[in-house]
Length: 374
Ligand SMILES: NC(=O)c1ccc[n+]([C@@H]2O[C@H](COP(=O)([O-])OP(=O)(O)OC[C@H]3O[C@@H](n4cnc5c(N)ncnc54)[C@H](O)[C@@H]3O)[C@@H](O)[C@H]2O)c1
Image (cartoon, rainbow, N blue to C red; front, side, top):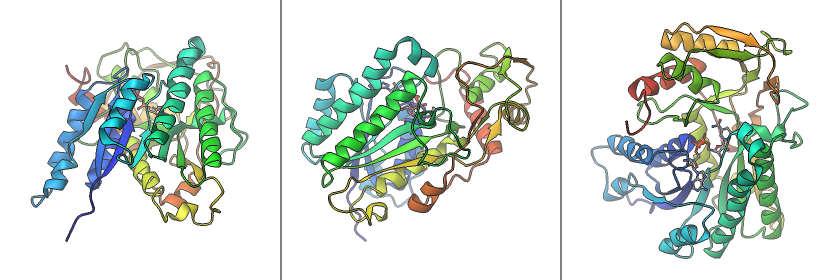
């Protein structure tokens, strides 16, 4: 049986938390040649070496030369805000040489974005516009974009369908809304050329079950899961604060929709395939209408802060002591996805449960108590 040649896919931010798991999901199929661009602003190059290691160890005994080739990553340490560096990568493969792009790289700290908004807009919006221009120049017009549930701000209805108005309430969130709008305009201007999918992530958690790759935040983690893992492993003091217990939720604490990062990563594969010619999702769309879609990637189940603390206690054996303090500015009571559209149109599923997220996170953290490269 002859194999289809590998499709070259560029993953920006490939060394980061979500990026490394997306690279894993692509390599798992042995259908892609992954190119990664990352400046390692918030990641370690070791993560890419480890993903390759996972792909190699999953190769069957009768692996072909092409299968082996699919486990190697063309990794470029380059900055997406630097036009010459990005162009140089596209030059290497020539016009039409890259099949599609999964654009994951961005700055992502909501609080920080309120302090240095211009830096956020330049990195998240400016670099995206530049990337799209370079892609256009090189006849690469398939785009999967890492968006976020933060585009919904404080949503009027839970669970949140994709039709909800976009009304982010931080520069970070607005940078995601802006990029989605830029993609709308681009696909409307050139409906015959461009196809784009925005994936609105809810709250990714956990790690690859091998414990080889995982989330490695710089400094004190801002998100609950890595914070609890760092506390249990003794990396940060166990001074847990729960912000608000008087929200209109079952136990009064904030509710979020956590999704295992491996499930989230596999969603990118479905999105990429949905950009191929003849894809079902654009079947009914007129030739001169824009080919663009947005999908929520979540489980569709909300979990409260206290439920997460309890699940992590079970996984780690660490007795978390917490103090309930006042609400934190900008926190929304409930962000739970309606994932029906992604299920129906992409065939997306997020089977891993909360217990598995905690177990896999703890496995990663205990195997790498100080993160990558240490
Ligand atoms: N983690 C979450 O909770 C979450 C939720 C919703 C959406 N997202 C989005 O998912 C994406 C990835 O998030 P993550 O958690 O993996 O973050 P991350 O920081 O681990 O990964 C981002 C990667 O992009 C790289 N990068 C940033 N700016 C760059 C630039 N100018 N040039 C080259 N590389 C650059 C970083 O070095 C890093 O490796 C982001 O777009 C983020 O907004 C994340």
